Image (cartoon, rainbow, N blue to C red):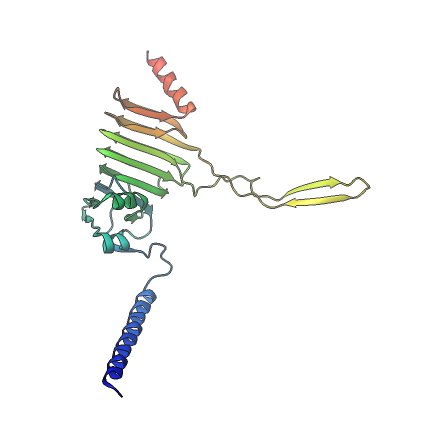
Length: 277
């Protein structure tokens, strides 16, 4: 065999061996993934219990919270691997402190960050959130009370699975937006919704024809009620609880601040003001 043939053969063997080795490594990594975990594309950086959150930064992206039996803080693998993503997370007492000091390298990365969720937070409950210059969202919330303190240029949103909350305590300043609404995963529970509907048509030359409609999908119900709302809103901040019926409302608003209320809540609030006057 010629020398060149031997060299080509050796190179071919090395390439094939490399491909096989890579496939074996990738298979082992894939087999190690928990297929039941819908967030397997995230790495866990913290798994200690906490009940409160103090978060700084992240108002150019999305940071989500979901209730879960086991607490954890997770970061998107793609963000860490290809964009040098990093957050600082620590537990002190029963509070999670999260520092999101990442800055996009260019306009493309800035646009990409606006579309993804680089950080996800999980715990059995989250009783209070303090945030500065952040964009934070609580999804599929099952608890009936929460305390929120937002500052800087921040956006905070609650998507609740509980249509009747006990109390919410809101403090806002600077340029912040806080929204409470029902989760899109909540569906209206109606005894008549979903039943088969039967239509009987009488034919012209006698006889009948029966048509059975398929069950209707439960409709999304945005209605919610809150027993007590305490709001202290300053500067250019806005609180939106416009889909909620409110039993007790205690609001302190600055001249440039705003609050969005339902018609029912607005009538109660106006009547209480008239009685005081």
